[in-house]
Length: 136
Image (cartoon, rainbow, N blue to C red):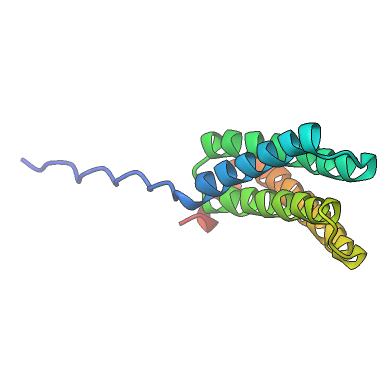
């Protein structure tokens, strides 16, 4: 009598992406609170709140993506979204804190990273299981 081979162990979820998403949320909440209660300059407050409005929804989306599919392909898109939203928001936060205006040059690259991440995730969603061979 032969026994069936053991089932493969489930792939471990990397902890770096959810940890980074949590850090992203903490920074967004801290700067949002600071803008609401400690910044008098309307332009500086608007910059910070714009960053928060991009940062927090992307944090929630990353956790949704982690629950959607445990895949390196999905993780790569989620990383692009996470890093893009983090640097975009930090760029605006730095401007609000008095950084030189050239710091704003980073914002378009970060917006592009977020767009790329979402487009990549759309490709993965449309492809379904057709991309499974690239995930192992």
